[in-house]
Amino acid sequence: MTVDVGDKAPDFELPTDGNGSVKLSDLAGKPVVIYFYPKDMTPGCTTESCEFRDAEPDFSAVNAQIIGISKDSADRHDKFKAKHDLNFILASDENGTTCEDYGVWKEKSMYGKKFMGIERSTFVIDGSGVIRNAWRKVKVKGHVAEVLEAVKAL
Image (tube, rainbow, N blue to C red; front, side):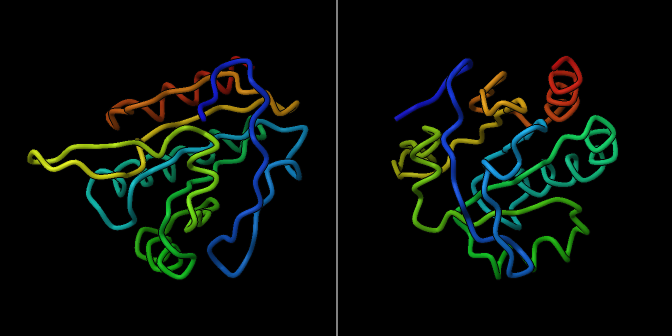
């Protein structure tokens, strides 16, 4: 399955860091930025997460909620969040259902080996639950600024 701009965002309820949980439909009425990333504590994912951390006050200023999602456990998210002082929700999709619902669980290739993994992707969802922007195969540099501009344009 895959989703695209103009589609209703698939709802989800996932465990989060800090023994919490997040349900997308509970955030109705405000913009939500969901970014899917491959793995906590890896260089690209750390850079991306820290850029979202640094821009979080700008997202908050327009009432937007940031949610990072990977297949890492909530416990691993706790460590990642503490190590890098992340200031937004990290959700755990260990069974991969949400990744599949958003079409980010893809065959990847590294050093000639094929494997399944999360394709770095970001979605901006408006207050009505509709996907307004989608980025796939995200390159980290400059991405967060682009996402912020999209949220501000809602």
